[in-house]
Image 1: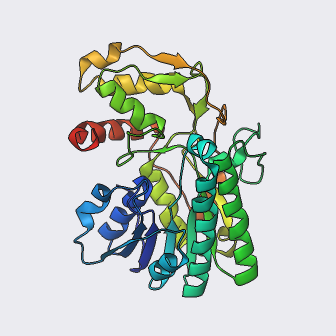
Image 2: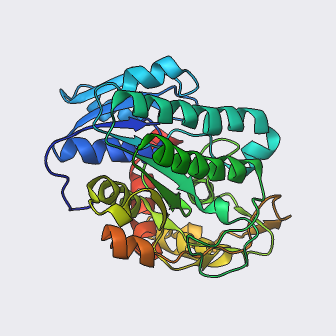
Amino acid sequence: MTNFKLDPIHTVLVTGGAGFIGSNLCQWLLQNGNKVICLDNFATGKRSNIAPFESHPEFRFIEGDIRNLGDCMEACKDADYVLHQAALGSVPRSINDPITSNEVNVSGFLNMLVAARDSGVKRLVYAASSSTYGDSKSMPKVEEVIGKPLSPYAITKYVNELYADVFNKTYGLETIGLRYFNVFGRQQDPNGAYAAVIPKFVLQLIGHQSPTINGDGSFSRDFTYIDNVIEANIRSITADSAEAVNTVYNVAFGERTDLNELVRLLKLYLSEFDAEIKDIAVIHGPERKGDVPHSLASIEKAKRLLGYDPRFSMEEGLKEAVAWYWANLERIS
């Protein structure tokens, strides 16, 4: 895992800490000598993700919901910093159920801002999203140029940025938003209707099933390995210049890969464990509503103000992720 330090020891609240990104953050923080409070309601998170450190003396788990202000207050009361990862992800999920997405992602976020403000939290770092760029055709995506949102999910994540800005200007709460670009890696759930494309394709290929690409496969993404995301979060906690705080950053590697190339690489890396996988055919289906055709991040702002220096390219991260899924096949199947 990433080898930078967070010093001195802090108490950090990770909301959504039993989820994919949240559990990886909990693990890193504990391994580097910090105290961790984890808040999760298991709507999408899994107890198995936090099982390895539930008995850790510096780990405290609170089963609660960010839609409940009391749960947020309880979680924040001893925290120095908040890494807010709790949300209902997925563009298709938000299209199918915009009300719940709004309740969790907007009302829940507002609860966390209030709780952080009233508890004297030093800084709240939150998971923003590249979906905020919407129909903007500029490439690469720079933080100051966005378009109109293309899904209810994108609206909720943009509203988070607006609320964070208002809470800083009105109440003095320090915030940093991290616009994640297609994060992948260990602990990401391959199952369910709203599974992300990489773990979903990995599980299908391991099972000798043909993955279905939405569209002709030319849509491209800035796929971002989990360790790069961990680095961005920790550097957001430690940022100490006024210019670096109360703003948003792209969190990505800065390269894009189309879906056809993604599947080619997955088949290549998985065939090292099972040679038959390289011959599995791919199915092409209709394009998905709300999908942005292309996504590529400029990470210059994060490099300049946070010292962000992502170690893992898409290919390097994909090799590590594939090896993790293969080693944990019984657990994830």
